Length: 379
Image 1 (tube, one colour):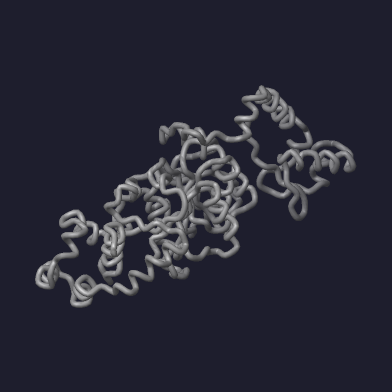
Image 2 (cartoon, rainbow, N blue to C red):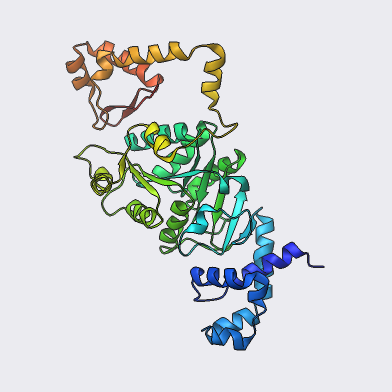
């Protein structure tokens, strides 16, 4: 016997499968007639409303077998199917044009209606940008859910930064939730779900990646969020599309500046010239969005430091390290060779190599081909 919940899912999927009918039209009809009322309209009523023959057929004679297969796949892969009028549907997303009629959700559904910040950027981001992104995500995850697209580069750094800080993260993907794309992020997707995070998609189970799905996905990433933070992007980056979508959706746009000689930062500089808010500290975002700490998501390291009374000592040690002449000799953006570090610091090569190893263990520099890069470190 079919339950009322199952009947509702079937009804939403019937509407979802009507071809060539924009989501904003479906939403308008939902609000006017309700889900049950809309599906009870006869051929004459649908025709008078402008439905094509194919659309009328889809409404009146739905592909029930296909719908049941979608529901079976959702159950198999632990997905929830959430329709537009469902109270669990993200309320922030309802304010955008062309919001999805149906969302497929894995993991913690409660995150859908917590404050979110979208963090986006280049798939081929520089090491420095990925490190900055990780640090920002770790800090900001105390105040909001970190939302991104599970892509390589900045997306992955944002998800990992939140997870490493014991925070919440949400991934919006452009495929069915029965697969992970890119496949190299299967472990990351599992970690997101294991740590009470969420993965969502508007794509039907079984949907494979294709070029047009990713720009459509971006409107959900920005639409669910209070603001969009672009970490690193070229002038032709998809992240600038996300920024444009955010502006159209009346969201705040933030951008991190970078070296003027780096083409990877030119997109961010363009956004800053257009009025995006410059961010060089997580407080810039927290203050503008008026974010409050999320209950129960305190950074584990901060919790331990507070208990042991070591916070002030750690801050002093970190400040002392940044006065180190050797550390000051390493650049943030450009690769600095050992010879240049020795020349700048006026230290012997042997001592330079030993101290660089110590700084690397402390997470202040990292070895790269040709030399070292200084990593951002906040206290």
